[in-house]
Length: 54
View (cartoon, helix red, strand yellow):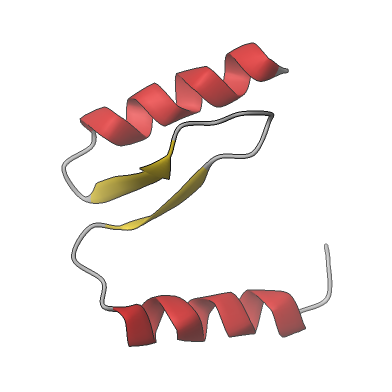
């Protein structure tokens, strides 16, 4: 599983519209749109946290 997180991190690093937040330590990869402001990122986070899982 770690291999997949590392691979995703590398793809995010190379993508011009994304900004890697931190290198993956486990299987979690944290990223955000490179040009998104903090308010938009916070709004998306709230929507995701409040939504029901699929």
